[in-house]
Image: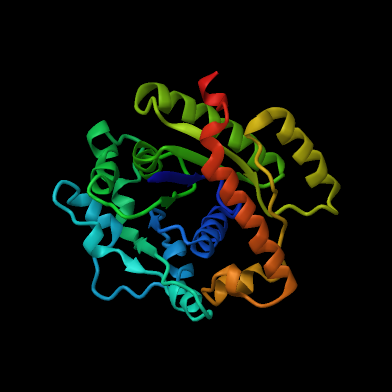
Length: 273
């Protein structure tokens, strides 16, 4: 089971959009997947069309991590209904550990190592998934460290813009320090450039800068700014089952990105140099 945190120091770069795109690609590929929504805003939970059905959210499960039953409280994504309606389709697995504002009690800068292990403890009793995607809040506080402690890999999301690129470099340094102190087996899955506008000279310049800065950790493909992406997310729909050429092209890009992330263990991570 691969556990991947999707992280960014800076908000507004489309971190949750990338999480949803990867979840959509995993669903289409038939990979049994669990999405853990650690962002207190719970946007991934909303985007995955989750109906709570009386289940316990991830914040309250973290509070009771020693005895909490994550398996009993995951909720199937509403996307599964759409995927299973296709002729000849098998019933795929895309489950969600629901986000809530309650998880914010752990988003503190002074979180101790025992608290950092809470999600790892919950996931240690989970089976049946090939992939776990953790949507982190846009900070390096406690919830992100909880996610990193439970993960094999960290995928960093950045826009090709000055502040985002600088924030990604700082996150890289923080990840290296965290790995040395708490998680020696953690490595960087790579950096994905999101919301790219090829016609923007600033974006072209920053993309070249990112490739120089991050080298082999810079993943392909980049994800372009999508005109209909807000509509897709507003409908709480999988991009792989949204009509139109633009959505099909975006779905193919996320298929390729998922392969890059899953295969990133073969890369020599900068964090180990």
